[in-house]
Image 1 (cartoon, rainbow, N blue to C red):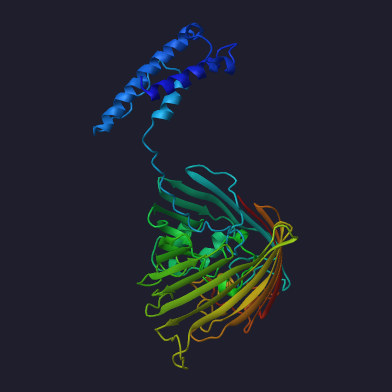
Image 2 (image 1 turned 60 degrees about the vertical axis):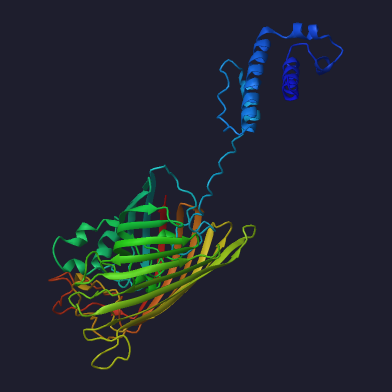
Length: 526
């Protein structure tokens, strides 16, 4: 018997005898005890295991000798089933010669380098109320009461894509849906009931071209798309359907925002696109997202050419978010196929203070600049003339927010301004039921017509849970031309008359240059 076999047998016998009742370590290690006495103390069960162990050691020695003379090392056969689990474990540990295959390192998830719930335009919920391998549900409600100091007698507010009725409780949005995800296939659905289901479609003129009533077809849907995730680089997502644009930084959903009424740069630019997007993540800190879309917040095409755009989002660390949205090529004026639109929207958000141990625990700001123009069919991007007026858009907005008492309270101060000659992005007041498609002679949007406006906002939030926000907000907005609903309102006596937006004999809307509002809302997201 070789030295290695003697050593293994000695260790095994010692360990077995240590487990015998009444046998001490000193007794098992004593060399004075006769060998016959030791044999008599071994129970039959242990003797059987010793015999199996001897056979196994002989087999291992044969395999070792074979490997020394150049023979390929055979796979180690399984331990005999009549050997106890403790012996199997010992043999498996000592005889294993194949190293474990190292796991392939997982790719870093996109934007996993920080907690982004502080961002303006991003939901602040850190954990889903419910989740599963297949579906993550989402429920949103937005209920508001708006006190308008102009007191329009028809309770109708003009010039906003978020606020619509004065001095009434109104459900701005009820959304039910969520995200589906399985086997790299993805889909998202979010419904919209309440005021959004009427006000959002009326700002899209594209359903006036063609049949099948696109406004009603999409009325109750804010997001609906399906696609596939490719495990390339840090991920590529290809989605088609209706998706959020986020041109203007603020989210379509008020729960996600620092303020209830965003400035004009956000309120007057698209909330959704209908088409295809491709989200490419070359690194975990960078997203490049091309779009091929029907047009500028449109269910269909306005003319014969779709729009092309894209987004670049860079987040180098948990304090910075740098966003650029670009749009072009689209012909987005109904019935004017020779006019092309271009737009750039660029934002930066910076969290400049973060200390969870202090009463003032966080502070951040956002700054957005938008610029754009239209050219062709009687208008010019630059160097306008009386016969070829300039049609441009230039605006900015700035917001500063602080969080208090472990994010239980939030305070936001901000505002912005725009200059939009030609008024091609100014929201049309709903005078006598006017829509983006109908227009109205009471507020024309002809080439070169001036429109300048500015606003300021102060917002206070109480957030006892990550799933709810109680919001109070004061807004002041002003323009160079009468635009906001005055005390006389924008509805003819007895309701709308004639075709939407048409003239009504002996009546005119009451439009004013100033608006002051107090917005109160309860916002919920699960």
